[in-house]
Length: 338
Image 1 (cartoon, rainbow, N blue to C red):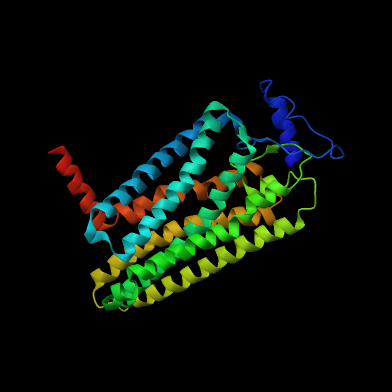
Image 2: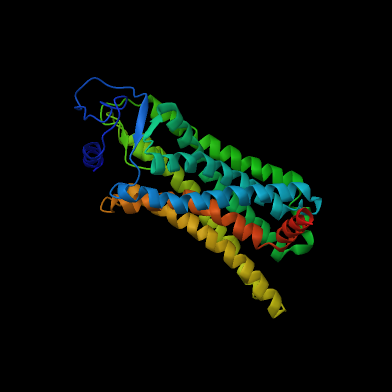
């Protein structure tokens, strides 16, 4: 499938002399190649819509950057917001900013300027940021679920259980886990030898799409990547479901109907964001392993969603819908306008 898409791409696009020959099909028995660059294809079959697809992606990128920077600025400025929930939210905002800024600008250059070339080392760096910070995003969702569980089920001991020291240790554990398990990905890719097309049928440097271009046995590399992603993603997802089940049980035992509705509204919006993240990421993961009959444009479009949508939704759901943050943002705007 990759070879067919690559041939289709080469036939439809006339590249400059600099890229000529890179798109040429090399026989598998030729000498091994260490490429200096890759070509990102975008969304195969939807090349004629790239300009239009870039518009909502750019809008979500602007909202993600402005929203997450606003959350960081507000929490930093207001000492009353230095609580567990908002500290975890800041960690999530930093993760969203890194994910957005490491993927969206390059993606928009591809959609709007036809910039298909990406340097080999830049591709490896983008790969590291995507996979490691996606794992961190999952970890911070779990940390925030733990925070909500303690806040609702044991509110009197919330600040004593989740002290600043413990919050820092939890954040460090999530950071170290993401770096430790996914830093081998670009290292493994760099050690592979390439003797096929250098075209990646994707909008960004995705690990499995790059691995499939190698002309050596990649069985062990694929097994490592799948096992790490599966263990981290499934464990985080199961623990999040467990804590939210406990939260729901506690919510239904609240004496006040108003309190129950408020807690359900807050937790419901959080769960929606988490479902969007895990459903799109899970679809991408399972498609690489089992979905050989899934249309490439469907697979790649949804693969973009788990990198684009959560950073866009998180500052809205966790920020604007949070009364304390909304109050401080509005008061700051009033001061500046007056």
